[in-house]
Amino acid sequence: MAHMLGIDPCSNFSGAFCHYPSFSSSEVNRNIGFTLKACFDANGGDNANRVFVKEKKKPYDYACFPHPPLFGGLEKDISVRDNGRDATHIDVEDRSLGGNPTKPFYFPDQQLPQKLLVAVDVDEVLGNFVSALNEFIADRYLSNYSVSHYHVYEFFKIWNCSRDEANTRVHEFFETPYFKSGIQPIPGAQMALQKLSRFCNLSVVTSRQNVIKDHTLEWIEKHFSGLFEEIHFGNHFALDGVSRPKSEICRSLNAKVLIDDNPRYAIECAEAGITVLLFDYENSYPWSKSEAADDHPLVYKVKNWEEVEQHLMSSIAL
Image (spheres, rainbow, N blue to C red):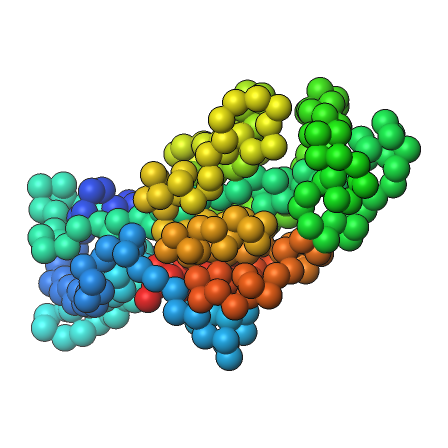
């Protein structure tokens, strides 16, 4: 329909404006009327300062709102009038229009919304670390474990060995194909993060050790290319080097939200004022169950990436 009217659609907004349509054909002898209505957020479009409101009576403990349009609810109508009489009404909501670049339509008092800064864990949130580790342990140490055995995310307690021995086994795992090619993305993560990257600044905050930094960067580039602005390593459970708390890393980034599967990190960051989405994939992570985390007002349980997306979009829409 746009082409029939002589309108050149553009694929997206440029800067903070779109163009009026232009009509170059002499055969078009009509008056074109525009009605543009915008309902902007009272907080000036600053998504970085949005917060969650925890509602225990809501499904999944959050209030879900529709995905917001880029400019806070812009609605556009085009009326085509012939000799002062309405001939056609075209609804072009959620469509940007191209035309004469010398006559842009500006939003002079509004800026593009500031993106919400979100920190994302790697193991058990982006990739299935424990499943790959279990295969290595079964092959190397003839001990069979499943994800359901891990009531805490401290391997020495599950394997009935010393902490040092557990760390040694994990570092052996790092040198094997079980680690280098055996960790697969968590279902739904790639699609959800691709969508969220339009509204959020995403960074990785992982407890992984510095010794596997290069491989981790390669794995993220392979499966989540271009989605993360920064990648930070806590170097926890390392054989050498200094470790950094996740709360410290998140504060240094000014992250407003952390997505993590470990209740210990969830409570640590929530106590620092950071909203946490505690990831328990399809309720299959025993270590993610925690009354202390459930009771914290800044910790929200999510069981898949669809719920992560819904939580974050509801935050942006508030």
